[in-house]
Length: 213
Figure (cartoon, rainbow, N blue to C red):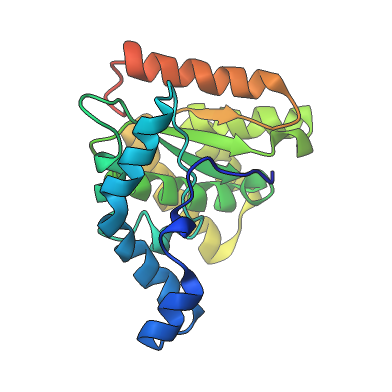
Protein backbone atom coordinates (compact mmCIF):
# COMPACT_ATOMS: atom_id res chain seq x y z
CA UNK A 1 0.00 0.00 0.00
CA UNK A 2 1.71 3.23 -1.14
CA UNK A 3 1.98 5.93 1.50
CA UNK A 4 4.00 9.04 2.34
CA UNK A 5 5.77 8.75 5.73
CA UNK A 6 5.79 11.69 8.11
CA UNK A 7 9.44 11.01 8.88
CA UNK A 8 11.75 9.42 6.29
CA UNK A 9 15.30 8.15 6.94
CA UNK A 10 16.00 8.93 3.27
CA UNK A 11 16.03 12.60 4.23
CA UNK A 12 19.27 11.81 6.08
CA UNK A 13 20.76 8.90 4.11
CA UNK A 14 20.76 8.74 0.29
CA UNK A 15 21.66 5.37 -1.24
CA UNK A 16 23.22 6.85 -4.39
CA UNK A 17 25.48 9.05 -2.28
CA UNK A 18 26.68 6.04 -0.26
CA UNK A 19 27.38 4.07 -3.44
CA UNK A 20 29.45 6.93 -4.82
CA UNK A 21 31.30 7.79 -1.61
CA UNK A 22 32.24 4.24 -0.63
CA UNK A 23 32.42 2.63 -4.07
CA UNK A 24 29.72 0.09 -3.28
CA UNK A 25 27.05 -1.64 -5.33
CA UNK A 26 23.35 -1.43 -4.41
CA UNK A 27 23.41 -4.39 -2.00
CA UNK A 28 26.53 -3.28 -0.13
CA UNK A 29 25.24 0.28 0.04
CA UNK A 30 21.91 -0.86 1.54
CA UNK A 31 23.75 -2.82 4.24
CA UNK A 32 25.99 0.16 5.05
CA UNK A 33 22.96 2.48 5.05
CA UNK A 34 21.35 0.29 7.69
CA UNK A 35 24.42 0.64 9.89
CA UNK A 36 24.65 4.39 9.31
CA UNK A 37 21.11 4.94 10.60
CA UNK A 38 22.40 4.87 14.19
CA UNK A 39 24.18 8.15 13.48
CA UNK A 40 20.80 9.85 13.03
CA UNK A 41 18.88 8.44 15.97
CA UNK A 42 18.85 11.75 17.82
CA UNK A 43 17.57 13.54 14.69
CA UNK A 44 14.80 10.96 14.24
CA UNK A 45 13.82 11.19 17.91
CA UNK A 46 13.66 14.99 17.68
CA UNK A 47 11.38 14.77 14.63
CA UNK A 48 9.16 12.23 16.38
CA UNK A 49 8.98 14.48 19.42
CA UNK A 50 7.83 17.40 17.26
CA UNK A 51 4.79 15.41 16.14
CA UNK A 52 4.06 14.30 19.73
CA UNK A 53 2.10 11.28 18.43
CA UNK A 54 0.16 8.73 20.45
CA UNK A 55 1.27 5.93 18.12
CA UNK A 56 4.33 5.52 15.92
CA UNK A 57 4.56 2.94 13.13
CA UNK A 58 8.09 2.32 11.85
CA UNK A 59 8.31 0.57 8.47
CA UNK A 60 11.67 -1.21 8.19
CA UNK A 61 13.35 -3.00 5.30
CA UNK A 62 11.63 -6.25 4.36
CA UNK A 63 14.97 -8.00 3.89
CA UNK A 64 15.84 -9.38 7.31
CA UNK A 65 19.57 -9.06 6.70
CA UNK A 66 19.15 -5.28 6.35
CA UNK A 67 17.53 -4.69 9.73
CA UNK A 68 16.56 -7.58 11.99
CA UNK A 69 19.81 -9.48 11.43
CA UNK A 70 22.08 -6.44 11.72
CA UNK A 71 23.41 -5.36 15.10
CA UNK A 72 21.93 -1.93 14.47
CA UNK A 73 18.35 -3.24 14.09
CA UNK A 74 17.59 -4.07 17.75
CA UNK A 75 19.59 -1.00 18.81
CA UNK A 76 17.44 1.31 16.68
CA UNK A 77 14.19 -0.35 17.77
CA UNK A 78 15.15 0.00 21.43
CA UNK A 79 16.40 3.57 21.10
CA UNK A 80 13.51 5.32 19.33
CA UNK A 81 11.23 7.24 21.64
CA UNK A 82 11.74 8.89 24.99
CA UNK A 83 11.45 7.64 28.57
CA UNK A 84 9.28 4.57 29.13
CA UNK A 85 7.90 4.41 25.58
CA UNK A 86 6.35 1.00 24.96
CA UNK A 87 7.33 -0.85 21.81
CA UNK A 88 6.32 -3.91 19.79
CA UNK A 89 7.71 -5.67 16.72
CA UNK A 90 5.34 -6.84 13.98
CA UNK A 91 6.41 -9.74 11.74
CA UNK A 92 4.48 -10.33 8.50
CA UNK A 93 3.52 -13.80 7.24
CA UNK A 94 2.97 -13.80 3.46
CA UNK A 95 -0.41 -15.39 2.75
CA UNK A 96 0.69 -16.99 -0.53
CA UNK A 97 3.84 -18.50 0.94
CA UNK A 98 2.29 -20.11 4.03
CA UNK A 99 -0.42 -22.14 2.26
CA UNK A 100 1.69 -25.29 2.54
CA UNK A 101 3.08 -26.62 5.85
CA UNK A 102 6.65 -26.26 4.62
CA UNK A 103 6.16 -22.58 3.78
CA UNK A 104 4.40 -21.94 7.08
CA UNK A 105 7.14 -23.65 9.09
CA UNK A 106 9.87 -21.76 7.19
CA UNK A 107 8.16 -18.46 7.97
CA UNK A 108 7.61 -19.52 11.57
CA UNK A 109 11.35 -20.11 11.89
CA UNK A 110 12.09 -16.64 10.57
CA UNK A 111 9.52 -15.14 12.95
CA UNK A 112 11.10 -16.99 15.86
CA UNK A 113 14.54 -15.75 14.79
CA UNK A 114 13.32 -12.15 14.75
CA UNK A 115 11.64 -12.65 18.13
CA UNK A 116 14.95 -13.94 19.47
CA UNK A 117 16.85 -10.98 17.98
CA UNK A 118 14.44 -8.45 19.53
CA UNK A 119 14.22 -10.44 22.75
CA UNK A 120 13.38 -7.45 24.94
CA UNK A 121 10.54 -6.20 22.72
CA UNK A 122 7.11 -7.89 22.41
CA UNK A 123 6.32 -9.37 18.99
CA UNK A 124 3.07 -9.73 17.04
CA UNK A 125 2.82 -12.03 14.02
CA UNK A 126 0.50 -10.77 11.28
CA UNK A 127 -0.89 -12.75 8.33
CA UNK A 128 -0.75 -10.08 5.63
CA UNK A 129 -3.06 -9.87 2.58
CA UNK A 130 -5.46 -12.31 4.22
CA UNK A 131 -8.22 -11.18 1.83
CA UNK A 132 -6.67 -13.28 -0.97
CA UNK A 133 -7.35 -16.47 1.01
CA UNK A 134 -10.56 -18.46 1.04
CA UNK A 135 -12.29 -18.93 4.39
CA UNK A 136 -11.09 -22.55 4.54
CA UNK A 137 -7.48 -21.55 3.80
CA UNK A 138 -7.58 -18.79 6.39
CA UNK A 139 -9.00 -21.12 9.05
CA UNK A 140 -6.34 -23.72 8.23
CA UNK A 141 -3.41 -21.31 8.56
CA UNK A 142 -4.70 -19.69 11.75
CA UNK A 143 -5.31 -23.16 13.20
CA UNK A 144 -1.70 -24.13 12.42
CA UNK A 145 -0.53 -21.13 14.43
CA UNK A 146 -2.66 -22.16 17.42
CA UNK A 147 -2.36 -25.95 17.29
CA UNK A 148 1.09 -27.20 16.35
CA UNK A 149 -0.11 -30.78 16.51
CA UNK A 150 -2.47 -29.92 13.63
CA UNK A 151 0.52 -28.41 11.81
CA UNK A 152 2.50 -31.60 12.35
CA UNK A 153 -0.40 -33.71 11.09
CA UNK A 154 -0.75 -31.55 7.95
CA UNK A 155 3.01 -31.77 7.37
CA UNK A 156 2.85 -35.56 7.56
CA UNK A 157 -0.04 -35.65 5.08
CA UNK A 158 0.98 -33.01 2.53
CA UNK A 159 4.78 -33.02 2.36
CA UNK A 160 7.04 -35.76 1.04
CA UNK A 161 10.67 -36.92 1.08
CA UNK A 162 13.39 -34.89 2.74
CA UNK A 163 11.15 -31.81 2.94
CA UNK A 164 8.64 -33.83 4.93
CA UNK A 165 11.27 -35.20 7.31
CA UNK A 166 12.86 -31.80 7.95
CA UNK A 167 9.46 -30.12 8.34
CA UNK A 168 8.35 -32.80 10.80
CA UNK A 169 11.49 -32.32 12.91
CA UNK A 170 11.09 -28.55 12.96
CA UNK A 171 7.35 -28.66 13.67
CA UNK A 172 8.09 -30.98 16.61
CA UNK A 173 10.23 -28.21 18.10
CA UNK A 174 7.24 -25.87 18.05
CA UNK A 175 5.03 -28.60 19.49
CA UNK A 176 7.45 -28.83 22.41
CA UNK A 177 7.43 -25.06 22.81
CA UNK A 178 3.65 -25.11 23.01
CA UNK A 179 3.13 -21.64 21.54
CA UNK A 180 4.57 -18.57 19.89
CA UNK A 181 3.15 -15.11 19.28
CA UNK A 182 -0.40 -15.43 17.93
CA UNK A 183 -1.09 -14.97 14.21
CA UNK A 184 -3.44 -12.10 13.34
CA UNK A 185 -5.09 -12.05 9.87
CA UNK A 186 -4.94 -8.52 8.45
CA UNK A 187 -5.70 -6.75 5.16
CA UNK A 188 -5.99 -3.11 4.16
CA UNK A 189 -9.27 -3.98 2.41
CA UNK A 190 -11.09 -4.74 5.66
CA UNK A 191 -11.15 -2.78 8.91
CA UNK A 192 -11.68 -5.84 11.09
CA UNK A 193 -8.06 -6.97 10.83
CA UNK A 194 -6.71 -3.52 11.63
CA UNK A 195 -9.00 -3.29 14.65
CA UNK A 196 -7.80 -6.70 15.84
CA UNK A 197 -4.16 -5.63 15.42
CA UNK A 198 -4.83 -2.45 17.37
CA UNK A 199 -6.48 -4.51 20.10
CA UNK A 200 -3.47 -6.83 20.37
CA UNK A 201 -1.15 -3.85 20.63
CA UNK A 202 -3.25 -2.41 23.42
CA UNK A 203 -3.23 -5.72 25.23
CA UNK A 204 0.55 -5.99 25.00
CA UNK A 205 1.16 -2.43 26.13
CA UNK A 206 -1.38 -2.41 28.96
CA UNK A 207 -1.77 -5.84 30.48
CA UNK A 208 -0.28 -8.73 28.52
CA UNK A 209 1.57 -11.31 30.62
CA UNK A 210 2.31 -13.99 28.02
CA UNK A 211 5.80 -15.43 28.44
CA UNK A 212 6.19 -15.36 24.63
CA UNK A 213 5.79 -11.56 24.41
